[in-house]
Length: 145
Image (cartoon, rainbow, N blue to C red; front, side, top):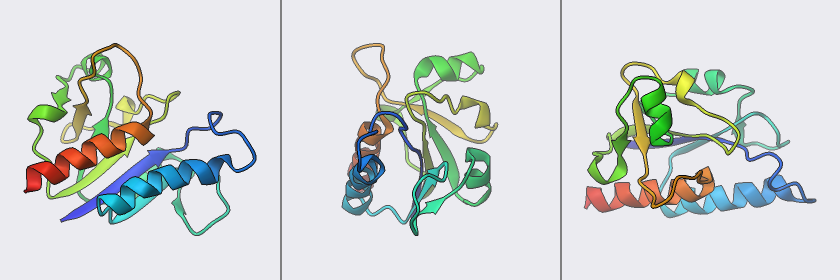
């Protein structure tokens, strides 16, 4: 079983002196806690050894496993798909979870065999990928046991 996460940086939200490092540290906590095997960030913003790609298209070309895009239900419906809700979701053994950011809709990269996963929240709003990653990986862990 392999878990890969592709994450888009939240540019503009962590704009203080060490913003990217702070954001990465939050992602990293979830990656370590839930045993993520590979983490990829889009676009290249940090001068480091992190795996980064300029575009989501480049990142997607570098991974194998079932692609699971995290999006709001309306985005699934907008492209003619029924959203799959986390509560009913069976996580694939080899999964690539793709998280957007507050300003980007990833649904245009979803292909026929990909999954468009939604987290049912009690209000109609956006959630940071930084928040959703822990929810999704915790759900995966609980359903594996």
